[in-house]
Image (tube, rainbow, N blue to C red; front, side, top):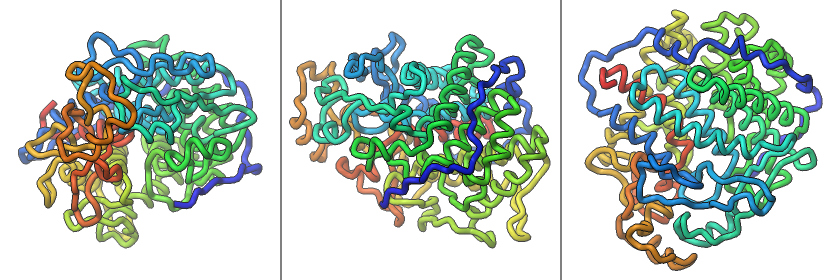
Length: 512
C-alpha cells in the first residue's frame, strides 16, 4: 500500500485561542441512551449477545501492559513493561498492546479509547453489569494517555521498536527487546495521532462525567490542550517517524480527518461554540464531504460525519445540516441494492473491505449502523438513497447480520470471537496466548525460542477470551493458521466498536 502523506493545509483557520473550560455546560448526560425508543426484535435470538458482550470487554484485560490489578480476570497474564518510558525519563507504564505483539502504538490505542467511550456514551445506559467493566477498560487506556501527554506540545506515541519486537516471539512478561520511546513535538509534528488522542480524552471525559467528575475535568482540559497542539503544529506523524511507525500504523489518510474528528468530540464534550465555529470554518478543508467510506484507526471521516449528524438531528444545530447528508451518503454506499451501493460482500454475506484484518471494518461499520439508526429514530428521520428509502430498522438488520456472521452464522459455522460458541479460532496470532503462561512455565522463553511454537499446529494454551480475529477472506475461507496475521490476529480496535453493537443487540433481544 502506498503511503499517503497529506501536506499541511494553510487555508484552514488555526485553532490557537485558549478556551475557557465550560465544564458546567457539558453535553447532555451519558444516560440519554435510556431515552431513545427501544426496538425489541420479536423473535428469539440465535446468539447470546450478552455472553459475547461480556467476553468482548474481558478481552481488553488480556491486552494490558503494566502492573496488573488484584481484580485481573485474565489470570494467565502477569505484569509487563514496568520500565516503559525510562528511555526518555518519563513514566509510560500501562496502556494496551494493540494486537498480537508487545509494542504500544499510541495511534490505534487512542482510537480504541475513543470507540470504547463512544460505545458507552451511546449504549452504556443499557449495559447493566458490564458498564463498570467497560469503564475500567477505558480508564486503563486514559490513565496511559494522560501519561503520554503530560508535557505540553509533546506526545509519547510509541513504546517499543516494532521491527525488533517482531523479530522475537516472546511473552510480554519476558520482553527483552528495546523499549525505545518515540514522540511527536513542535519539530516533529503529528496532527493525526495528536487529534485522535484529543478525541479519546474528550470522549472519555463524557463517560466519567457523573461517576468521577474530577477525572472527567482532567480529561477534558488535557483534550483541549492536546487538540490545540495538533492543530497548531500541522503534519502527519509518519513523516518524522516513518521508519518506526510504518508500515504498521502509517497515517495513510493524512491528518485532516483526525482534526475534524477531534473537533467533533471536543464540541460534543464541551459544547463550547469555539469548536462548532472551527468545524464550520474548516470542515470542507478537512474533508467533511470526501467520499471515503472506510472507518477505522486510520480514517475517521465517516465517524465524524455520523457524530456531527447527531448534533443536527437531536440538538438541532442547523449549521451542521450538511453532515446528515454526508452520513446518508455513507449509508447509501453500504446498503445492498441501493442505487449508490459500493460495498463488497463475501458470498456468505460479510462486508469485505480488505484482506488485512477485515473484521475491524465489520465491527466499526456495525457500530455506526446501530448508532445512526438510534439518531434517526429519535429524530423521526430516514435515509433517502436516490429514491430508495432506508429506515432505521433496515440499518439495524444489516448490523445484526454482520454481527451474527462474526458470531458463527457463516459458511464455516465458525465464531470469529475466541471463547464464544462451540467452534472458534484455536491458533490466533498472539504471543502471550500462544506461549505457555508464566504459571505453567516460570522460566524465561528466549526471543527466538518461541518461533517453534508459533510455527506449530498446536492450539494456543491460553484462551484470549473475547478476542476477535482478522476474519475470513473474500471467499469466506479461514485457515486458522497462527502465522497468518492478516486473518488470525486480534486487535483492540476491532473489539472496541463491537462493544456498542453487542450492547444494543443484547438489549433489543431482552438479554440485558
